Structures are given as C-alpha cells and as structure tokens.
Image 1 (cartoon, one colour):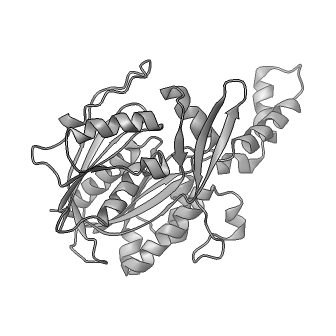
Image 2 (image 1 turned 180 degrees about the vertical axis):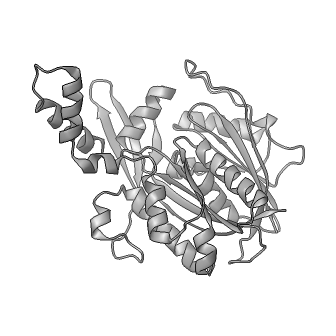
Length: 341
C-alpha cells in the first residue's frame, strides 16, 4: 500500500548574519534565523514561550497550521502518529553556560565529589534542564496539537528525518492508524556550529540555519492542495561511520535506483567548497540537480523534510519523479524518492 504525503507546512530562515566565534582562530559562520511573528496564529502562550527555543515555537505554529488545513477529525488527530527529528538542543549557548558557570562558582571548594554533584543539581535553575531537553519540541507539539498516538524523537543529525519517515511508514503499513505526522526542527546557532565543525573540521564560508518542517502522511489518497505525492522508495547506507576520519566519501550512486529520476535534489554540505564538490558529483548522476544549501546552508534534521516540501512544488508534467539524497554529519547517506500521483 502506498503512503501518501497529503499535507505539509514549514518555516525557513529569513534573517542571516555573520557570527564570529573565535578571534584567536578566526572562525566565523553564517547563521540563519526564523523570523516568527508573535502575533501569528497559534503562537505559544507566554508561560511556555519563555522555556521554548525559537525553532520549537515555529514547530508548534507550523503543525497547527497543517492540522487546520488537513480537516482531520478529533478522533483521527487523537490517534495519529508523531515522529520528530530534532537537532541541536541548545540555542543560546552563552546564556546556558553562564548559568552553569555561576552555579559552579557558588559551590564550596572543599567538599567531596558526591556533595559537589548534589549541590550542582540542587542550585541549577530548573528551566535550564527544560530548555535543553532533546524531546522538548515533540512534547510541545503533542501538547498544543492534540496528537496523542505513538510518538518518538529522533536526533540529532540530518539522517534522523530519514529514520522518522521510515518509522512512520512502517507503522502505517503494519497498523490500523491512518495518519502520521513527521516533523523536523533545527535551531542552529553557536552550539550547533561548535559541535558540527569539531566533527567535520572547520572550513571557510560555513553556513547553517534554523528550519522547521512538518509532513502529514496517510494511507488514504486524499488531495489537499495540488501537491499530493507518494513516497515510493527509502534507502540508506549501512556503513558504520569512522569517527576518526573527516574526509567526505560520496557513494550516493549506490543508493540510486536504475531508473533515473527527473530531478536529483541533494544536501549535506556545511560549507560552499563541499557544496560545489557535491554538486559536481551529482551532475555526473543526473543532468537536473538542485540544492537549498546556497540560500539556507545546512539545516540539520530539517534538510530532508524541507527538501521534500520544496520538491512538492516542483512535481509537474516535467518532474514526475524526484530523488532526494542527503549526507549527515557522520557521512551516513540516505535516499527518498517521491512520485507525483
């Protein structure tokens, strides 16, 4: 049974700035942020807003817009599945670390380790833990949307969206639930940059941005808008990452089916040099290639979902089949093929 994408909604970054990280090492990167209007419909309550990352707020607004457009009944929504791919869970690194430093500075110096840990946990501001929960986005989405079916959070690299989609489709095929929401949320920022660049190695013209995307999958072929499509193939590499190697190995060709798609959409780079190398590789596989990287940089777990959303607008008589390929932080590659219905 085919699994159809019957709805989608998302937010991309619209504000970009150059962020300097170290004067000593001359490291900097381009950061993209989501400009979310507080007066927009479905904006979180003030009490919740203060403990939400900006991408979490956008995810809550986005999924409620999607639900409004879907016309799902209360019963259908209540039973729907929810799988969320979540990226870096610290948005304001300086704020979080400054709180921890203050806590450590206030601890007595001449105490045993067990007392030190007890004191650290006791005087750490409770909001610090809530703000940095890895499943915070999923929890708030469920709270505000009323989606009460089976749920899980996947993270924190771009391949997490692939596994979220794979799990949603598996559950739809094997169970009696008709609908599943698959979400991706990436906040980006200094913590994300430091984590990613320390893994890959820093390069000039580094670019990453916040993004939030939501897809509604269903067993039923219901048309919402003109962009109905089906996911006909999901495939990923099985190679175990070598954490000591920073070289990029491109083996996307091994994932692609024999039938060439009308468009090849790719992501995975964090800097423009790697993007150009990815592009040259992809052009050998398909004459029609495209990537969101030049405009938005790397979007972490949102790479795949935002690529799918963009490709839905490209499905036409010219583009009936589109392959979406991605490489995550550790070199794990994935492929998703979508086809126009």
